[in-house]
Structure formats: C-alpha cells, structure tokens
Image (cartoon, rainbow, N blue to C red; front, side, top):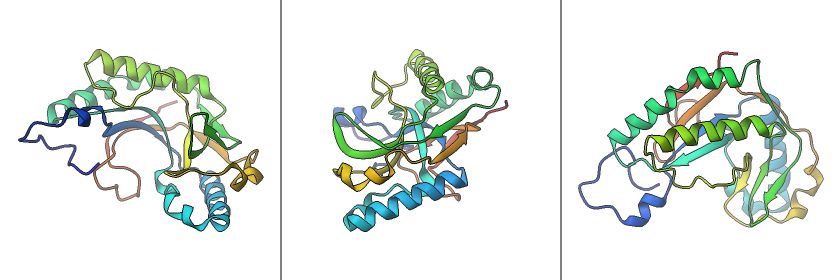
Length: 209
C-alpha cells in the first residue's frame, strides 16, 4: 500500500480503495527447519530462473493468512483490534492442546500460477479459525476486503509472476517442516516491518495451550 493506512485522509477516498485490503490476520511461521527448507527451495528455483529472486517471500515474513480487511481510520483500527483480542480465550481453547501444522508439498492455485505455496496438512482447524475471526469482525461491521468466500490456507513462498511447475517439481512432495501455532497477529500491509523483520503487528494473541 502506498498510503499510510493508519491516517485519516482529508480528501474523499476513491471507492476502489475501499476494496483493497490493508490489514490482515496471520499465523507467523518461524520454525528453523521450515525456514531452512523454504530458503533451499527458493534458491533452487531462482537458480533455474534468476528473475524470480525478486519475487521470493522474505523468510522473516512467512505466514498463513486467516483473513484480510480494509481499515480506514484510527477508530476502525481500534475496533478491529478490540474484536480480535476478544477472541483470545476462545482461540486458545480451540487450539489446545498444542496445534501443529505440517508442510509436506508445494502447490499453486487452480486459477493462478502467480503464487507458489506450501499448504498445511492440518487445514480443518485453520478453517475454523478463519471462520471464527471473520464472523467476529463482520459482526462488528469491519470491511473484510480481500477475504475470499472459499478459504484456502497456504504459506506463500514465491509470489507476483507466473511460476512454471517444472521449476519446483523436484520439491513437490518435500517434507518442509512442522509449525506449532503459538501466536496470531493483526498486521499492517503498509507500515514498516518490525525489528524482527515480520510485518508491523498491531496486536498479538499468544496461544496458551
């Protein structure tokens, strides 16, 4: 996003901007084994097609998105943050005992070759999480811009240009690693990254399992 999403504009916004997400809920992916495998996969693909290097997702920003939204003002940001935090106990209960996500393949969306991702195998719990948050936010009149009706959990590895299947076929069934869900973050798409390199996080739910 080019505009500062946290500032209220003094001029009327173009209608189309309201349909662009500028905040999202994400599960950070931080396990060292996953980071190492993703780095190896990115390096191998970019060695075969060097121009894809600019489209590799930063290892610091690996995540699974639960939903996206458009927040127009400080008031909307505050409301979304409160709604998000209000689910902490319910989310921790859903994810107890420790919920782990296993990544063991690479895939692309049926309608687009512009994203290469690793789908987590434990999808049902992610479906429930996404539905829980979207229902809560929608009930609070939050604009869920960019959130698709059919939720497809995924960890993006490369994104932005068509990626030919032959570039990653050697890794199609590679075991990438296991990530415990220990946090969920409300993130900004436009604000500078945090000190850890991850997206700017407005609020964070620590999962107590």
